Length: 453
Image 1 (cartoon, rainbow, N blue to C red):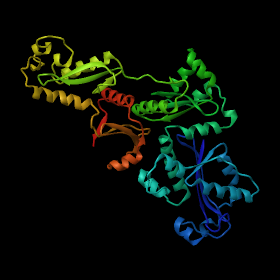
Image 2: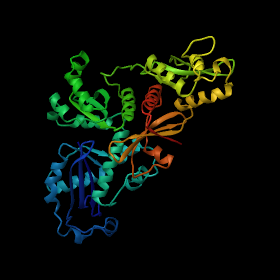
Image 3: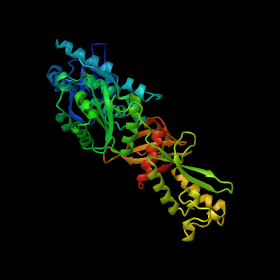
Image 4: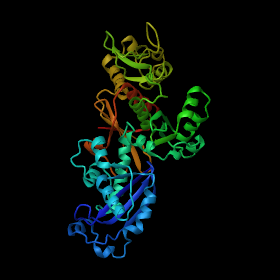
């Protein structure tokens, strides 16, 4: 649990500043579950430059509560939470100073979104909240007011959690949770999980991830883990202390995150060396007469496939369908063995490439249309899929045939600049697993929106 906050102060000498406004949003990693926003009478003068910056003046604070009147609420809303702020060192120092004046020792773990942003979103021109928010398309209202800045920090922190593929933030959070929360019944864990599409993480008591999975219904899938009697599930049941999850909205994003994060985190109950999730590929070659031929074969790492499949049956089924759709020759596509013409030629669905009646250059154009559609080679495109909310979409970036990563964006913020998109993207590794996941998903979801760049 996180308490994301922002504080406005009077300015002045170090450790003599007073709080003029405070906003705290209690955030469970998915949504705001509680909030506290209040002006505060600092009982001292506000520096003129601060008045100009925030718009908060002494007249506005005359009837505002003093700090001791809101202190109990601050303690309650931050209890058991990690404090998150943009430049957390400043906000935490101010809070500790105010509590020290009351004779109370205020201690909380902290996270700074400036430091996290430098690690997870490197190369930004500025890491000030305003400029960083603009660069990332995060809307900010009431800039330099506690509520507006704290809400912008909530949105920034949500993006940073998405980009933290090593799950360092969430593992530390689990480790710091009070002991009594670390040993819930398995039914209690299931009860708190949603029936959404996403990735789930099973944690040990010390926060370490022991299993990562993906599901279109997280609650149902975790319930299957906890009720299964197979040896692996029983070992998981004995060791699991908490289950966290990430809502992805998109099944494609969930598949890609699962594959990437298993490789990064190497959970003990995911296979240590996860076998390749594809076995067969579609390959092309040109024969001595100049005709492009297709064949289905096992992926061997030497030849580069056009696209890949989980098994031989799905590869053959796909090729047979595409031969009919594009009026291709069965013989030159490896689906009909013969020394003469193919069967489709006799029913006028093949135009005679098998017996050299159709010129190879005309025939090859149709073959290339198929190859280019399903190959990653030199493609520059963005795949648009569902987001986590109605007004959000996910974007998967392919650049020069290389999978670069994914991001979420609000529909009100149109991405029309590739550089802005690259800033939002959570970078991920391009490998054959990721390529297979994307190609397989595109084949299964014909109505998916694909923007060519």
